[in-house]
Image 1 (tube, one colour):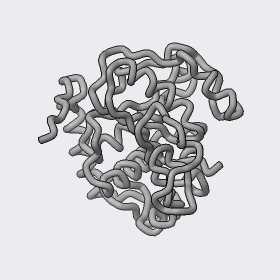
Image 2 (cartoon, rainbow, N blue to C red):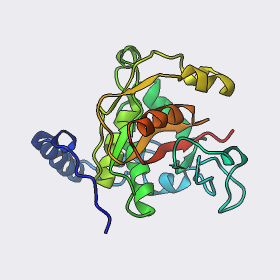
Image 3 (tube, one colour):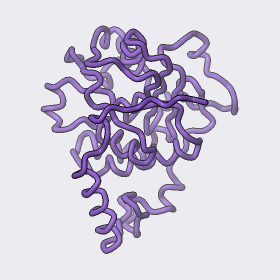
Image 4 (cartoon, helix red, strand yellow):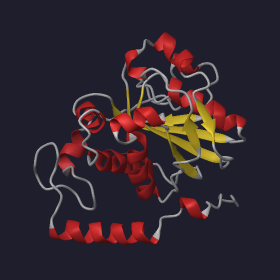
Length: 249
């Protein structure tokens, strides 16, 4: 029988977090959520998106099981994953297309942090549909303190909190740190992204045996690979990458 990792007390929700969660549940019963895309009533609990708009989101299937790249055939692997990657598997339920791209941009660049609830719940629900995740904890991709201070929040952490709540998994926000302030990945060509992230991350404590790295978008996988390499060196045996969306190109 599989032995599950026992998370430390720091990973467990506090009494205040539990009370706050119950209060939000009652609030949504009195004031139902409104869909952020069409303004129709949303879905309780905590998904400000109606069923119709959720069903219309661009699903990323079929996709490569290793890097989540969109494919034409089910059960295939993309040519880029012919060699080994630092992580074992990747999952991104949606393609980085309209309207998912708009939701992610509202979160990252317009500072509409409430969008993280939509994206995190969607990611958690799609993962739950696949069965119980085979990881012990979730690690949101860290931002450098200077970048996080400028933005005001870490979008990966905000998404991971809601995904972790859906899946009942601890979110380890202090397991790793971004120790080098790198150039923004989105502004770099694919060939320079891995070099840009060399020695960018460091562990603050020993990782659990099985970890899922969470981010908003998975593009080349360079960020995930750099973080996975550090986890591997720290003794992590199984690493997955979860993102809300996968870039098509």
